[in-house]
Length: 62
Image (cartoon, rainbow, N blue to C red; front, side, top):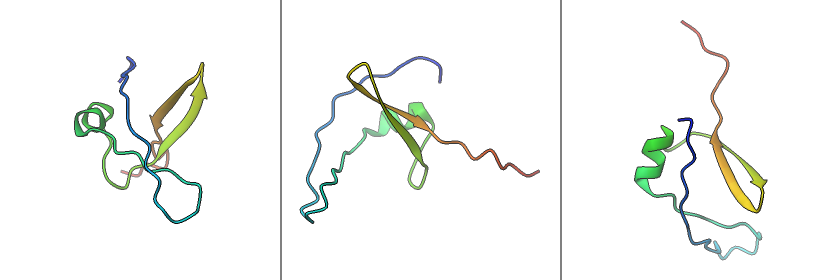
């Protein structure tokens, strides 16, 4: 995926006092990013936007 996708999501408080937030990413966005349950994402703040990118395992074996 080389082009950017934008979406607006709602941050949810998990209610455990941790200060963490939970966001639900839409299935179509996950499919477009080719990620799913258990995959890792990097997160950066760039120009006032939160940017998520898949973290691909560079340790591939044949």
